[in-house]
Length: 203
Image 1 (spheres, rainbow, N blue to C red):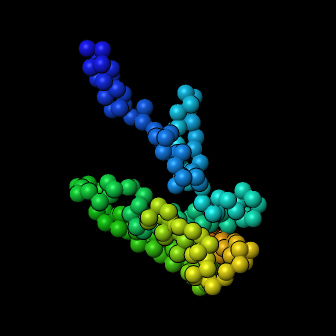
Image 2 (image 1 turned 90 degrees about the horizontal axis):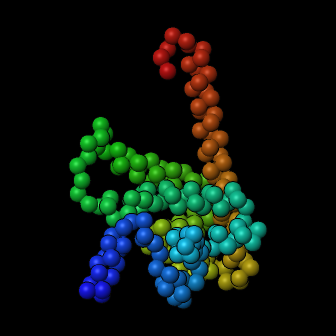
């Protein structure tokens, strides 16, 4: 009876979302050597995040915060484009009760346009490299060895050169986003100024 009660209690605990978390034993595997974990007050693993090359470069001072943010911004849009934001639930049949049943499709198209604009502004070499790294990371969950990808996309085989090329690509992407944001602000100011001159025109 004691064993049965203990197992019943374990089943109840397993169904409580507040008790869910990352399996600590999995964090000791070699495949998870680059995973950064956080623990709660009880010492249980509560979150885990894989540290990638962009995080490593930022921590070592080899990549600016703007370059790091630009890569994350690109990855966010790639996730939207590939329906990776909502997880597997996005593929399940659903009844759309929104006013615009194509709203999510519109989001994906907008993300695709943002990706194209950013990568075009970064230049063809940087765009090819960042797309190869970021798409695999977002869609597959792991980009693989970044050095191999840099060597394949650029032909650079020296370790220092590979790091320099990747950092330059991130900074080029940051510059592209800076220009995109500046253009958006200028268009917004122009729109506001145009409607300020015509007070009778509804905004």
